[in-house]
Structures are given as C-alpha cells and as structure tokens.
Image (tube, rainbow, N blue to C red; front, top):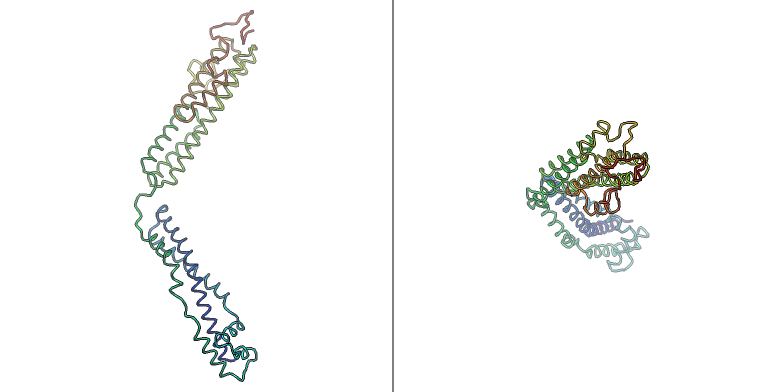
Length: 357
C-alpha cells in the first residue's frame, strides 16, 4: 500500500473508532452511573458511609469507557473495507481500490484527489449526541453523593422498636417463669435480647427488626415444644386415669412425669406433690408403688400444673388460646372430665374403679 493511501486508511479507521467509542460510551456510562448512584445512596443511608468515601465509588464508571473502547475497536473497518469506503465516498472512480490492490497506479494523482474528498466528507464526531444519555444518570449520581442524609436512619419510628422490645422482654420473662429452661439456654436467650437492645440504641432498624422476629420465633418455638410435651403428658395422664391395672396406671403416670421434666413443665406443681418424688427430680422413688388414692391425687396435681403452665404461656402471647381449647377437647387428660379416679377413694378387695386391685 502506498504511503498516501495508508495514511488515508489509518485516518478513516481512527475516525470510525472515535465515532463508535463515543456512541457506545454514552450507553455504558448511562448504565454504570445509574448502578453506582443507587449503590452510593444505599451505602450512605443504610451503612452510614461518609459522603467522600461513597463518592469515590463513582470512579468505577470509568470502566464503561474501557468496555466501550474495546467494543469500538472490534468494530473498526479492515484495510480493504476502509479502502473501498474511501473510493465510494471519493467519487466511486475505482482509483483508490485499484491502488490498494496493485500497490501502485497510473492514476495516483486522481487517487489522491479521491482520498482527500473522501476524508473531507467524513462526519465529525457527535460529542453532544453521545453525552446526551449521560446527563440524567450523572445528575442522579451527583444527587446520591450530595443530598443530605438525616442523622437518624430512615425506618419505622423508634417507638415501634421500643414497643416490640418491651413485648419481647415480657414474653421472655413469661417463658422463664413458666418453664424450667436449661441454664445455658436461658442465658443465650437473655444475651440475644441484650444484643437486640444494643442494636436498637445504635439506630440500626433493619437488623433490629430482623433480630426481634428471630428471637420472637425462638420463644414461640419453645412454647410450642412445651405444648407438644403437655399433649403427650395429657395422653399419659388420661391412660393412667382410665387403666384398671394399678401398675400400668403408675407406668403411664411416670411417663407423664418424665415428659413434664424434659419440657420443664414442673414449675406449677405444688410443694406437696414434689414431697412424694425423688429430690430434685420428677420421678417416683425406686420401687415405690402408689395406692389408687395417691395415684389419683398426683394425677390431678399434674393435670393442674399442665393447665396452669399452658395458661400462662397463652396469656403471655406465646401460645394461641384456641390451641388450648382444641387440646382440652381432644384429650380427657386436660379437659373437664379428667379420668374417673377419686382422690378420696381407697381401694379394697371389692373395688371396681380404674386403678383398683
């Protein structure tokens, strides 16, 4: 290729690269500035970033200029395409194409005229048109950096978090008063409540309300487990109350005691009931055989303890009262017609009542 033609082809490729880069850069910057502006706004509002630190993120918009340059470079015309374009826009006489193919030409003067005419006809880069799509995204990004952010984090009023924390504290207190929780579990629940209160004081509404929901669900799960244990204990008590075999009735009673101990449902048992059990446990002394009267008395006390514990959990909003009504209707052990054992009755050899000999 002759030097004059080579310079013309290079000039065309540069002009086409610049035009393509400006066109693509506007689109790429538009997307980048909108995304970075949204990120800056989020960081300033919710993460409490300083204005300068957040504004520094906008420098990443320059990546859009790089990606636009890479794509524009791929769209540049090749040597042959550029020569053909110069020939067409210079008069379409074929001199430029011939010179490109042969490397020399008898019409070099005419080819030079064509090159000059074609290069003069090249459109100027439309800088204003390329910048037009960037105006709104740039304004949005500038506002995200410059708009004043209130000192208090946007979110529900503090009184809402205060009320929810008070309700959560009351639920935890009810749970600890009603159930004999393991010490490590009680300490963990109390520590979680303290952490939530600290987050609320630091003004972090998103994490505060999420933590309140999680702890509230954990407390309700504990109450649900107690309800399920009470249901199983009620079934055992119903069996103890209706079994004519004294030994089997006592086995059912012991199963109810074990279930109540595991679920921590012994806090409502009267002191008189605990005196007949092994110290520090909810189990009968080894080899003990209760009479029908003792069996009936202890069964009634267990029933009352279950009802009192579940009632407290329901009044503390840890259980739905409708669940208790359904449970009492389904289980004689927790309903009004609890068993047929008479606590004042003493069996004799002619006894026909359940638990008789």
